[in-house]
Amino acid sequence: MTPIRTYLLLGMLGSANAWGAPAQVAPVQPPTQAAPVPGAPVPAAPDARLALPDLSALAQKASQSVNITLDPSMLAMASRFLDSDDPQDAAALEIIKGLRGIYVKSYTFDQDNAYRQSDIDAVTNQLSSPGWTRLVQTKSRKTRANVDIYIMLVDNRAIGMALIASEPRQFTIVNIVGSIDLNKLHKLEGRLGVPNLDIDSPAK
Amino acid sequence: MSDDLENQLRAALRPVEPSAGFAARVMARVEAEQRRQARRRWRIPASLAASILLGLGLYLRVHQQRETAAGLEARRQVIEALHLTDEKLDLAYQTVKEASGS
Amino acid sequence: MDRDLAKARAGDEGAFAALVTGHQKSVFGLALRMLGSAHLAEDIAQEVFMQLHAKLASIESSEHLRFWLRRITAHRAIDELRRNSVLKFTSLEGEAQLIGAEDPGDPLLQTKLRSTLLRLSPHARAVVTLRYQDDLDPLEIARILDMPVNTVKSHLKRSLEIMRESLKDHAS
Image (cartoon, rainbow over all chains, first blue to last red; front, side, top):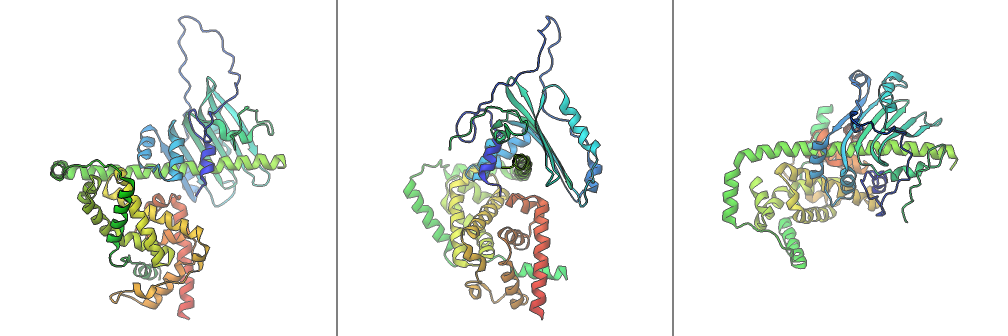
């Protein structure tokens, strides 16, 4: 079982981190915006939900596939059956408290490179739209795995996350919609170009 | 052969009763725990409870079963989604560590 | 059973005792198959019902109750196995007392299977027991053990292979 600490580090909380101290996010320069023009239409609030492509063709080739769609009603239903006395369940409850959706597609294959770049592009193309910021891009020579993590920031608050992991025999997309605590990502900050988010380390 | 093995496993792993008096031992512990904690519990008079049960009947039972199944499945999906996310976040973290030489 | 649950939730201790009686075989059986010790299995089973008594308000239905009991029992047994490495090598303590005269099939073969079960990892033991004691399908087992369905299937496949191998030794 995943240790509690890992869940707490994931820390998908709205305002409080797992160690009790309030989460802090250093001001991130908002995209430059022109002054609003009176009478002009107000742009719609950004939506952190991605349109995940139909990958049923990929699913047929995969030896294992995971397809999870948890909208607000499903998350609410799940929280009724998560046991607050169980450490793992309690951690999961905390994580999903501020969330409005969790969407996951993951495919595992018996051979290398069974999926195409176009499958990945169908998702990454959406992440170049306004609001999304790539937080980290990792490429491992050892595991030949690439993991890209994006967040959507509005008024300095993370309201969505997207993760794309492409490995030789597995392809995973995770899209999380809702208030996210970036504390987990502090471990990545300051290294290899990941912007220093100036998040305080938790007191030990 | 596989069916035979599975049937043998079913026979080998038949549920087994605990030793006599198990329920009584549990209730003794429950009673001791209650005395220790003096927990207040909301109690419905037995007659009112019977009326409620009769009134709700079969409809509630079917509805509850469906709700429970859906809820448990939603819970399972949450746990699986968080596991997978956690696994990929750690993959990214390990890659960064590996690249920084630490 | 639904009536007992509703009454137990309302504070009727007699109804709670009926729930214990109704589920003790499944709970004790699961713990016993995983731990190989009747003594430890009874401890775990008692703890599970104590925990149930405290958690009754959150149990929504009979089906939820069955799920909850199996889940808590399996997790406690897995924790016990992790804590107590001696259990990994345990023999079937008190086995003779637990075999009933009415048990069908080959008792020596069944003892061999139970003994092989105790050589499996904690999670594999849980998977196999839930499958063959309680006749649950892989999805139900996945929910109980917080495991991906495919991992459940892998455990089943591998465990059956191990059982088959052990029976070849038994036959020879």
